[in-house]
Image (cartoon, rainbow, N blue to C red; front, side, top):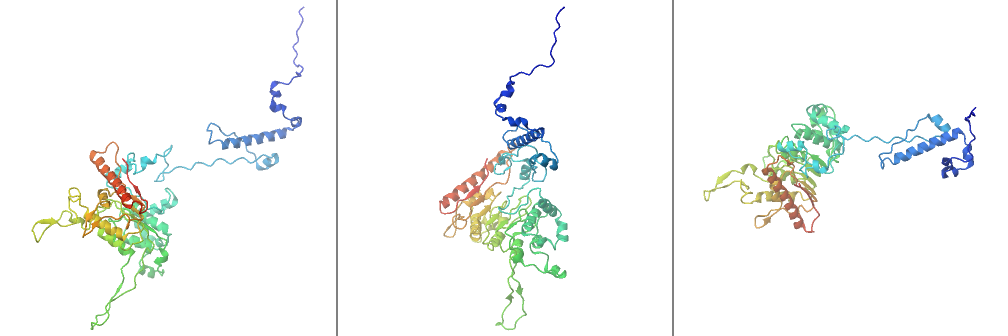
Length: 475
């Protein structure tokens, strides 16, 4: 009979340890570590997993392929008993990106600044193109002015108040002037932008000085002290409202009220004293330093340089001025095509200082230079000047004209020697594909004029004045 073969179910363990246990990591451990209890081994495993999870969270920015290990959470009492360290806090969520209207921005990185900046006008969005075709120009805010964050609570509240301004100025007229100064000036800017009629002289008086004295006395409200109320108002933004809902003359009379004249009875003697002027009324904004009078040529009927010169003579401490969209400087803009007959020769001569062909054929900028020279003498403290959208009369900033035994020109060393920022942008966007040759030629002329003005100012100063930065478009 064949011999039966019995296969042993249990065999004697080998006397030599497996290779995995003979490695350096296990061989270097002391013998007492093998005698640890199960609880100690579990606690050690939990510590190592938590530590490894923290290291992976720190290196997550360097290696996106690493993902954190799932760490089980236990109650605080059990964590103290088992001596488990605290679970690391989760990484904060990335804040959602919002656009100017408060909506969520599309996924992905934001567009480059050259695509959305008017200074790089080749890849500008379509809404700017529509605004340009409608005659609107882009206005830059005054530097340092308070602007609420887009989509913030203050931004939404001020925007809603501006839209409902017809109702707000009636129901809250006793509370608007008590708001903080930066909110009042921001509210005026929102009204100019979102309220279709714009800011009027009554709105300015209501927000900056409160209701009329009769209304305050009727309800027993004390008249505010304007020096204290508006002592910290340094800027006023009326972009889009000048020339549409408020004139420069009305603004001048509001900021600098005329002296009250005390009328006396008719005197019988010539030696009697005449009417005596009353005390001078305080300034509405005693510390005004920044003023924006930007206009939109599509919605503005007319603006007066003569009224601007009268206002500038009362603001010698103005440091920032925005004249975006203003027409060429002229004291008689409505007489450009008017002619009169000379009493000596009988020939017809130009009535105003600027004719229809003064710039194109004759190269005559004498009237514009005269107006700018008077403006520079009045506003000798300017440090910032914004002339966006004024490309048609950029040559007046560097031309010369023959005056009365003198040569008139804009003095960039003396009168306007403190200007360190000059903005000469076009304010319009040039379509890349649909632009005509005339549009491209006009934009090119503006850019070349801005470059020439920058070169002229630096040559005129030539180390004698401050360094000036001229911001202009590029093609």
